Length: 507
Image (cartoon, rainbow, N blue to C red; front, side, top):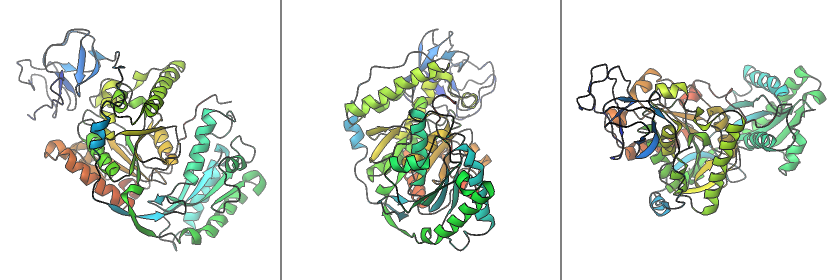
């Protein structure tokens, strides 16, 4: 039987690396299991009294809700969330964090250098609906562009991307919801992976094109184009007008050429979804090692999903570069506690049923594993949802844990690649920034081989080290940044995953 894993000497649990059946004694404690326990789940290393703290990763993940015998399965039936560490020691680990990202030998990729200095990993034309009323029009226009073969003469144009969504009207004309949507729309239109953009509205919606252009100081800009269905003469006329505009734009967009760019120009969004008991052991720590290597190249990585760092925020605060950055993160944590309570939820609504089936018991446990994606680098800044990414290093962007919403914010901020770890499996993709999917275990990598780009299961099955896997991952990221298609791109994913974070009343 494969040996269980103990992550820290202080841990009260061990993680099974193979399925155990009733009668097995995986820890050799003379305490056979009463029922089967799946791989990735936890068993007690010693007896735990009701009310005792339960530790994994050397941190509290929950409290025993009943007496737990040595060798017993530890999960939702006998472990629940409780108070977590709020004794924030801001900056306590900053010196060690800085040492973890010492400068490395220069690495490069082949990217599209844009006029504003940023670099694209892809070269798209974007159609951006300002409101749900124009969503169908831009989708049909994109389909027509492809059907008529307009892209065929331009091999270095990666495609046409339709940013359709379900909001833009029936909302307040100011406030958090409006701010989120305008940052998403403008962030995608001005994204370094986009060579030109066309905004399409109905005409009478809250999210007005002219107002956005005024807000961002882009009146008269030749890179951005706009039209409305009402002024153009209806659905069919607007589709034809969009197709004509794209045909006009294509020759100019196609002039972009890849050139050698330093890794410091790369911005990668860090994501996890469909997590399991191995996520915090294999794929997430390996992605953290790759993140540290990119930060050491003066590149940028962006951790997100605020509800999924809940309970582990102290690990980030201990390496915040200053008190202002720490205060930003603490304010967001407090906001989320109030936001979920106001809407009748709680921060422990997460993990999902699939997460729990994979071995994760509480949000504290899930968060501790999720934060591993951020490696050991200093926390340089905290951003609002979809806020433009101007800083270098490890950043945190406030987003929900729902993957499409979170990734939409990261891409709006300027991430040119998304790296998505999963233990249960995922069919996620994104445009205009491609998603690279990373499997936490061999079984998943083999069963969903057409979806998974990288396997981290060999960390357990073959003894590959976390640092070595991190280096392998970063090299793969640079290859995809240079034009190598990700598995999600080969499958054509990403046209339906743009979901802006809607906050506020729908009116």
